[in-house]
Length: 315
Image (cartoon, rainbow, N blue to C red; front, side, top):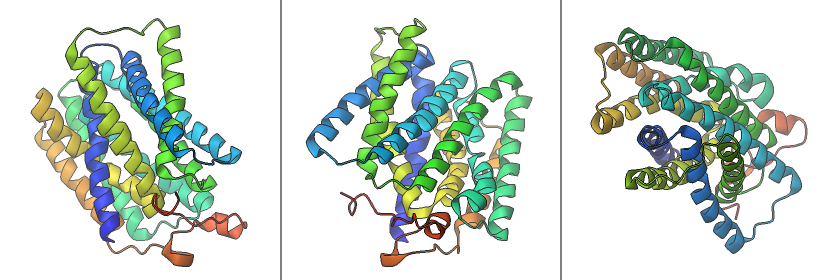
């Protein structure tokens, strides 16, 4: 219980850092250039990790990790960063991403076998209300065109698809090795995208490289690493519910670092989101298989059940 709480709290903090890094880095260059440099740096570190560890990854797990990189990094991050690059604030972009719990909940039952209780549905609906309040506050302030919200929304669909894929396939790859494979894949994809669209540059401002290091260490290493850890510890619905806490955290960071304003309606919305997370997470039991590890329902029913292992036990 303590381990899940600590992992969840750290996830919220580091995941928020990704939106702040995007806001920071796009001051100096375009979104695709920033992502290419981010994953080139992360890819070098990933190559070193894989060379040292030399993990044995099955072909099926390798395909799963590459597919997750395409969905949860190339599609999701590409469109999220593009939205911020075109003026969507870091906090509101994070807010659009927090709609994931509702999308996850609609498929968690039939596809993943993760039962969504009545209490959780109430919490998910309450969270949507909170999200709506914050978006309304930003639209009333006239910060950005409503059409630009389709960029992060489309990116969100990639994150949802990747999350469901991981929970359905349940790869045996450790979180560290999975992150390394995904980082290498994303390095190839974003570098190719930035190069072919003639957006790859070598910025001269030192602040740009500070943003790249911020994204690599805090967002990729911390945020994505903890996303994979929490996904295995708590399941898709619970890790998704934590995304409701990301927008208020991001908005506080953006207010301090970039003077992005927070209206009264947005504050109310953030409090509503916090209440939603409590409804979803507090007092909800986690189904376990042998050894106390969570086991997904549909996999067990079809004979494909695999025990979810922590990074330490899966090495």
